[in-house]
Length: 126
Image (cartoon, rainbow, N blue to C red; front, side, top):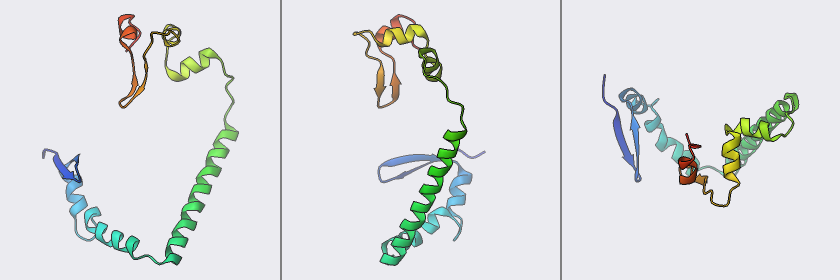
C-alpha cells in the first residue's frame, strides 16, 4: 500500500491517496488535465454563454428549492418543546441549564461548538 501524498498549492496542503492522485493526473480524462481547458472556457465565454450558464444554474436552484419544499410539506411537524429541542441538539437538561448561566462561555468558535471550562468542571462536556 502506498503512503498518501501531500499536495501543496496556493498555501493549502491536501493529503491525497496515490490512487486518487494517479486518477487526477491520468491523461485527458484526469481532473488536473481538464483544469486548463475549463479555465479557458470560463475566461473566454461569450455573454450569451454566460447567460445560458446563469439560466441553467437558476433552473437547477429552483428545482432543488422545489424538492426541499416537497420534503417540508411531507414531513410530520414536531411541536416545539424544550425536550424536543434538547434532543435535536443532543444536549441534556443539565447542560441546557448551564448554558443560560451568566458565567457560561460555551458557544461557537472557529472549530465548531466549544464547551467552556465551567461545563468541563461540572462534567457536562463530552
